[in-house]
Image (cartoon, rainbow, N blue to C red):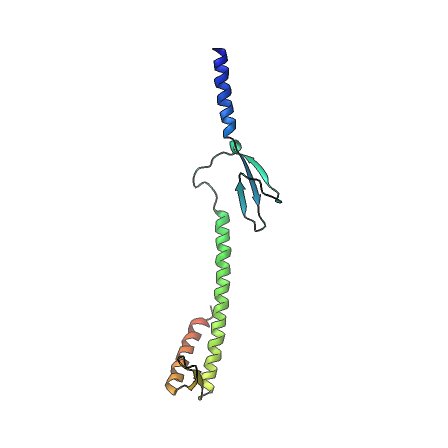
Length: 141
């Protein structure tokens, strides 16, 4: 009886150890953290044992880093949009000046690719279009 009890205890203890796994954690050159059961080559890593890791509740991970990254991305997007707006503004001002100072202008025909003189109506329509662009993209905030 005693032998049976020791055997059962040893079997339970052995099965507990067999469920334990080694997990390797490392950060790559881009700052991304990786986890794997296979150790990485030529990268410094940390060994974690699965039995030492306590499970977290779902949703308990802090998202503050994600919010900071989102703010940085948003800031970068705003800078790009501002640069694009400035470029559109610059081109619109140049085109408007060109349209207002020259009455005999040429454009390429889309079908034939030949240069064609623009009519006065086309020139006036282009002036209005460039003025709309200036109002939309050159507004000071």
